[in-house]
Length: 338
Image (tube, rainbow, N blue to C red):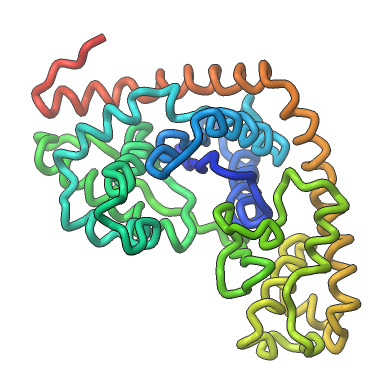
């Protein structure tokens, strides 16, 4: 078993990233059987598909590394690296561009969302982003890829690319493993604190919409207490949260952090107003995130150590990816330079 997943180093890691993905990465890392591997990467090559500041991108990559380690990713047990230090990602993307089809990419909903009304002005990198995502996992013969609902389509494209490449150039052999999705049962979909119908996002212009893992304890508490709610008290049963997006979001966050179910939380707080519930949520969040915030603040000051973590991880990743890259070149009738 080999698990591969990545995250873009744009903006700060936030509560939605942690509860929706990173906490599950840590759980997978900690539960792997002997011989299994986890590769987690900072997707800095993906980041240049959108307008960016080069100096800020480099700083954000190191900051995100510190955040992942603070959350529990252990570089001694998992391979943690950034894409740019493993040129095989972009090499394999180019080889796969000959197999991927325009029609497949035209159906990608994230390109439509990110390019908006100005599709002609979007970068080619944004359009071919899913082919690089395919290369990210196929390069390492990933058997499993953790995905949220918004990434299912991209993994399906990776499988389509792998299947077509195997059929067209494999001569009866499987050049690429077809990765299976992992949708962790404990993964939570955390929404914006300002609009419960939208996912918590690094790109939201309002910093009050998210809890950043770089926020200090006082700021976390303040954001929870100012989170958008409605005037009604909490219901005693889950059905009462229907059409109450902000209330559902806060209850979901409480349940996920406490390890309780939504019905259990409502059984305890049903009938109470947000004046009572928000302080309880703020206290729970502060206590849950305090060790992460403390470690993150300490780690992000040591840039030399962070550079070393990424360099060691990239070396291991390059070694794992070489056989697959060689096989892809050979299957296409190309001789790879050294």
